Image 1 (spheres, rainbow, N blue to C red):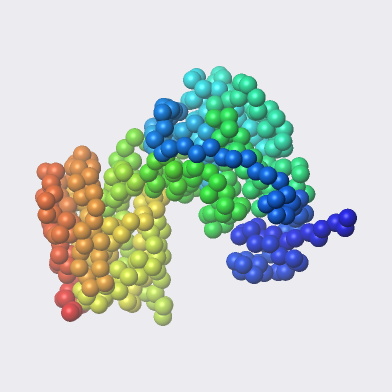
Image 2: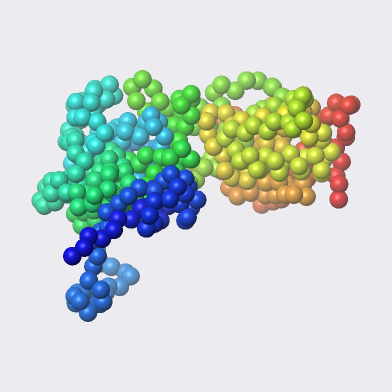
Length: 463
């Protein structure tokens, strides 16, 4: 029988091509095609082999829901939805050196007193894992270690009686299935390795945590189907220059998404932060123009963070627009609304915006806080002391109400803030939590709080 021709598979999207080309026709990526041997094809036609009848059951079952496996590290358990679920797969991704292996080793050590835990490393030798455990003060934890990359050997070791309760694979890109000719880390190997490990976890009832590398765009490397195969996807984020690390749930079949856990990187490993708002505001200066405190919501948790803006005259034909921690397109929209609806002269200025602490904000409720920081920097007038700001801004300049108003105000009151600037529509039916609320109906109302110097146009509403 003649040998089947190899195919070339894109490592970005998984598209197959009969021959090598420089650019993938499916996703447009360059130099991402890798040769892979064809898999053994199944017999054609449904009549080749008779399938087994599947068992049909009702939606309401009599079996009890298994208890979650709680590690005791509250920030990690919060992101997982209250703890890990048996027979589930978790995928943890993040930049190199961000602390993925460190936090999972700490989670494994916290669970080892009540569950049988196994840590399988494909990137480090056993002695290297022991060195990290000694540095973290976890050398006495009853964790089983192994250094392996062959999935067939791992499955043979785990299958049968006495299977562990928690299995950590570090990382999935180093694993390979020996029945495939492609190299470890390719689309076929990552897909096949994850499928075998997740299938075994579902059958034996243990929880498997897979560490995933990320691409330069910040996405988990490998086929996109990998994120569909697992039950939970966690991203470990943070700036290398900051000590804060944020674990964010972007997918969770057993809990809320967009939940975050905050950690602080120390010499003894990652420590959980019980009150992120106090930590993000710990280095905040006094009354400085261009600085505004935003009351945000991350998942179900209220978080206060400082938004910093700097508006300076530009010597360039095209002024700079630099953004850290927020959406650049959203900033362009706020600048246009302030220019067109409030008459603020921003077009000829360089604008720099920063979310302090390394946190990335995605919710539209930060619009009003960003507008306040920009108006404050332009006018040189500091924001009102002890005041938080939140609210969405429309293209006509109106301030729109946002959800979870009471939780935002309650968090601000707990940290000693005395006032809040928020949309007028959001004050109806809510509780002020003891704060003095300044209701804003339009951005013009906000601009009046920051009087412009005489050389600038006075704020006015354009219909």
